[in-house]
Length: 162
Image (cartoon, rainbow, N blue to C red; front, side, top):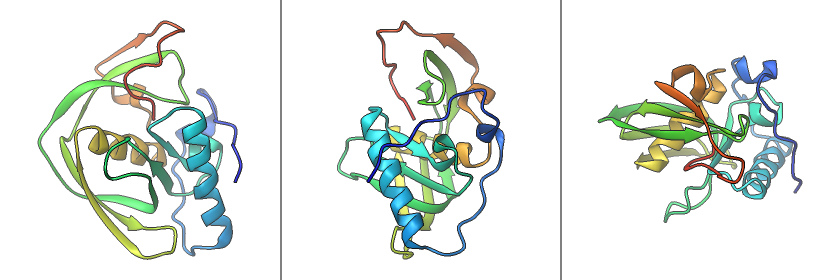
């Protein structure tokens, strides 16, 4: 497994829609593993494939809770409810946070790294991370939808970095 370079804004790959993965191959599995290593190395909560320069619909998330590490292929939100509002940051936009309105709870369907169907319902931070990472797959950054965007001090990591 390898640490990949995280693409930074304004790289155009961050603004493009990622392509659906049609076949789970060893290369896709390695990319998911590398993305997880990269996310942990950067002390993030989530990472989408476009953030490492690859336009595939792959995400990894670990909120540090009982759910553990999630590696998902072709994730899509199939149900949502409630609302939360709060700060977000992004590994691809260092030094910037924004206040973003998200669903409180989402149910996400996709495939695991073996190609088996995976359905996860999450609330709070997990819900926010799912929505943030799926937005990346559609070329949407949190700064595109934030109600307020602000700089954070260099010594702050921010409350959430996806």
